[in-house]
Image (tube, rainbow, N blue to C red):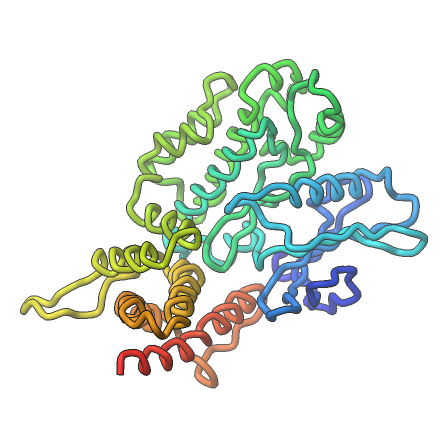
Length: 414
């Protein structure tokens, strides 16, 4: 895929709650191919608040219900609407517009870049922690899918998308299915068997290349996905030479020819030392933060500040080391919005002054460190073109909330 595809108009979409803008990636699929090779990815915004989004669109015509491309797209959208997991690409809105005229299958998601594009832009220079976190995300998403009794069926770079905050999201569920031939109403298995050969052989496990359906059904439901993921992880790290040694050991186990000897995704997460690093615990804590009460949120920020606090040789405090605890994208696009949300909740109740002061006291040191990570703004900012400009625009929107928050903080602290 040429990641710097044409940037042309993308209007005329059937989506109602999102404004669809220019085309970012335009795949040239065929009616006999899978939907993953035919989606047109467009920039979009949510009409209600202007937040960034991504729209995936696939054109269809009258009488094309039987084409592989359309069937795959419909299956993907149907499962996307029902799956709820932090590392599955969330479906915000979806439409399937057929009829007599030209129609489309379309859905809106979080703002993302395809993994292939992200690796081309950032793979060589990326903070190693972003790759470790990405692998952690996909393993968790697959573990969730496998626990429901389904395999993904198309684990490849084209099925993974990266958010501005560095989360890797699993998608392209066109071949997802239970592998149990005796399961009632399991028509997805027939579709999988008929079309799984359209997947690149580099991401098809040995039993799939042999079309050994008995072996696929006999072993753990996600064994073939695990094999494919090992290849994806090697590709993700290839611009840095190779995966870290502790992950390489597990990749070799994941790509074992005997499916019975491959680990599950849960076993990789538990066993690989790469996924026991401290920053992963902080990121997991950030993900769970929205479900906690305000005192727990304040306690989390206080712990994070304490862990990153640094002192000079004379014992006086200096700027903390937040960038040692979390990579930049996580600080700007994950931690910063949550800090601002916590402050907003705390400052609404002006009667609870102690709670307001506690929220300000834990948030301000972290806000100062995040501001220090940001590049120049306004006329001094470098002009960014291509797919990277969407991440820059999203950052500008998030950062705009800092000014309002700091103005309120100054009032409270006074």
